[in-house]
Length: 199
Ligand code: GLN
Image 1 (cartoon, protein in one colour):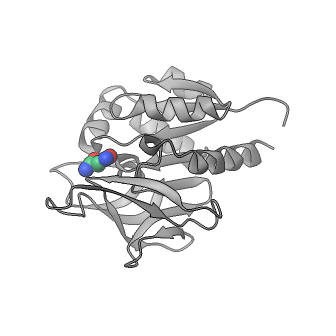
Image 2 (cartoon, helix red, strand yellow):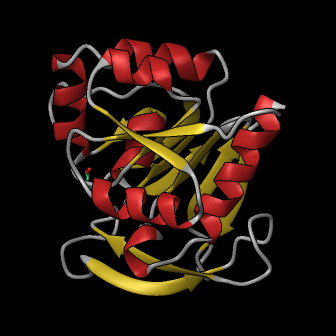
């Protein structure tokens, strides 16, 4: 490949800054995506954590929802974390009324799956395909993957077996936030997928 890939971060709501920081730390060229014209510039997209029902509304309002779905269907690499994972899922349980997703990944995701009493926690998760070292992960009102369709690989599970990281082709989704822990391994892995795709 002759040029450095341009990585977009969907910058409508959520922890955009943390993703930009990790990507910049890894030497990536980054662009904030707020409009379809920004999306057209990027080779890959990160969908941050935040509130999926808000990200859903804003992407539709800014006419980004369809172009994002189309680009992903065309093979654009994408990494969704937490609310970003929800946005990628084909099927959603416990969404708000009328909540939609990009339908880019054949999984079912249960929103806010850890219940009110365990809203947030930090732990280490093994993602052997991503790194030999466990990842530091923050689970903040996190979703869980409750169904994995054909062709979707499980990248990581909690000790009790719950699925928290998946990949299908160039589409990667995790239910936690690596970026708030200063964790860079998942983004590094994603940049590898992006470079491979552009080769
Ligand atoms: N519970 C949030 C949602 O439904 C996700 C939380 C997060 O991204 N940290 O979108």
